[in-house]
Image (cartoon, rainbow, N blue to C red; front, top):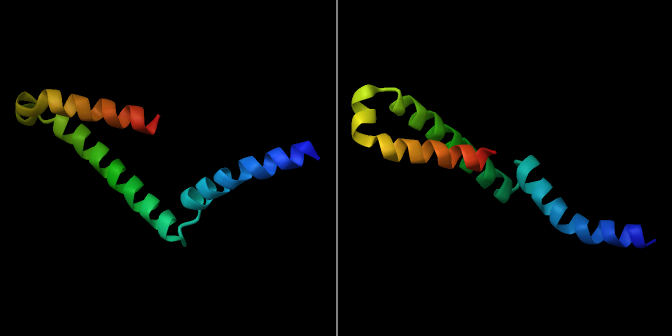
Length: 75
C-alpha cells in the first residue's frame, strides 16, 4: 500500500515530464520538440563555424563557449 502511494506521488511529475518529452500532440510537447531541434541546429552550426579558420580567428572564444554549453546541456 505504501509503495502505491509513493508511486502515485512521484508519478505526477514523472507523468508530466513524460507527456512533454514523448507526446508531441500537446502544446508543451510541441514546444519541447521545437526547442530541442533549434538547440541541435545551433550546436551543429557552432561546430561548423568553428571549423572555418577565418571565423574561428574572430569568434573562437565564443564558439568554444557555445560548444561547451551544448555539450553540457545535451549530457
